[in-house]
Length: 312
Image 1 (spheres, rainbow, N blue to C red):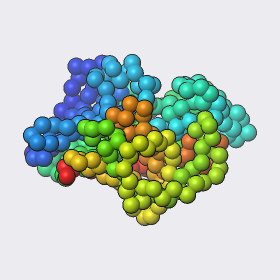
Image 2 (tube, helix red, strand yellow; image 1 turned 60 degrees about the vertical axis):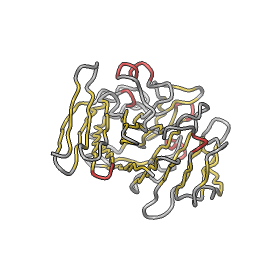
Image 3 (cartoon, rainbow, N blue to C red; image 1 turned 45 degrees about the horizontal axis):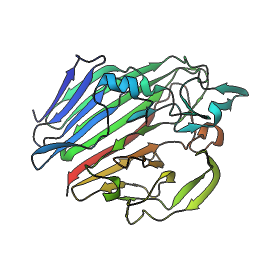
Image 4 (cartoon, rainbow, N blue to C red; image 1 turned 120 degrees about the vertical axis):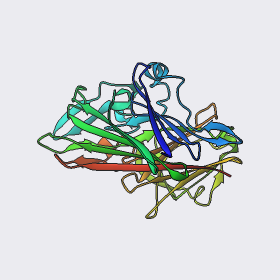
């Protein structure tokens, strides 16, 4: 078979490898957080990993909150104002991680996912992972199930699908996203980025949306990131918006579905990688309502994006 899947159980939590024996592309998924830790293709005969990830599962367990590299953002994205929101006339306060003064990046980023399914044939290799959130955080006492499917296909295409459903007797507030950091083997200052947006959400000094929007057409036709510092959220435009990140060697194309209408981009001070985050809801959407979903009981909600990598 062209595609192969391997599971390494020697770490604290299983590590799943998806491989394409023809192209040489390889993906490494941790059951810890269901996060992607490697997506590599051969360049001049040597594998180049574009994911700024962790040295090991143990490293991820210890340091996931230091940058939230590749973290699953669920059931809220980015920042929540003081960790508080009101739902059905009740005020809730998130107990989990804070970057003062706000709670950030949800609850499931350090969840231990069960390996539910694996598959490999001549067309693709995939793994299905499951997290059963029990409602343990008093700030989000609504149990739900989160299914993650990672699939590697021909042409170095990696797709991740998230499915959310629950059995509560009432709708629950929800937003979904991912927080990967990408490195193309050089400084961010050598990258070019292009994406389908002419509107940026205005943030206050604590990186929460003010409710205003700012026209920003810098990246529609593509622009260099040399000297550009971003920690901003953009509204994607068009039926099939894409984000293209490239340097002289590699090109990464990110293709979200309609469930991810927002693109958060962050350039860390070290400039060695860039976070490009597909989001279903804006920062603090539990309070401002921008992209907030009310997930109905017993109904499946699907969020999907794909990453296609090639040499130039």
